[in-house]
Length: 364
Image (tube, rainbow, N blue to C red):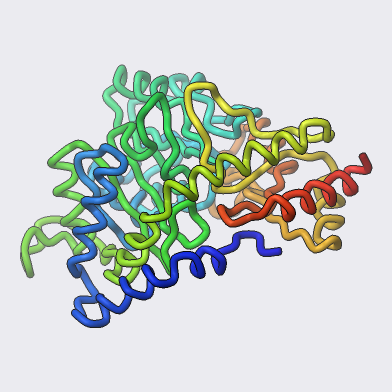
């Protein structure tokens, strides 16, 4: 079975996706065509954010957010060590310093209780990551940031569509940044991403930065990047939006069923908070003897992945930012996390096969 079933999704959406692509081919506006503004309006309405700015990737969304905030070399950004490299990468690319704080062992999200102690006179922002599809403790994070005059950027690459206390991920802080990488809850057929904010000036800055800092054609008012999302990719996401609510319902139902089927197995599932939901960008659990379990699952034809096998402070490119520090929960999670097949078109029979193979691997 596929780890993520994009073929079945395309089959279900083929007439809509093909028509959207053909419309772009017919009008020929491949960069900043009408579908870009159409998607931005649809995504802003969906999240409840005032502004949506589509960009070329989730990584670029984070980078542009930091640039819009005028992050300077030597500034500090507090974030989690248990994330994909892009989170720390964009901070370092701007000459700033990622300051890591540990995660909650049961949710794998950043531990909001540890953030305030990491704040210094150089801190400019906090960048929590809503990992695996569940939003972080954003109220607590925003409160700490407000006390110290800091911006908050939610790295919501995995949580688009998730809810937190009645609000949508990406509309919870100074900036929300998401990814439309094909495997994400809402994905395109290449790279793409989006930024969300309620701040008019930050939105203007982000729009200018994504087109090489132009306030109008050939007038470069600030340093920028080539960060536009292609019209074709916007068209694909527009087509997928028509099925997105159904897909989220499926993800939640499949996640709940996985958890029910696994309740007696000797493993640690992701803890879900009562005031939010999870869109299960990955269905990730924690097991001991992961290598042996993963090998047994692969032998049974069950694809798996590890998100993520090495925390940022253990990566050669970022080790200098964790020197002399230990983040035991992130380190332990990196040794134990294992992701199983998850997508809206996963069948119950496929789930049963996954759980049976997992039970066998765990020798239950």
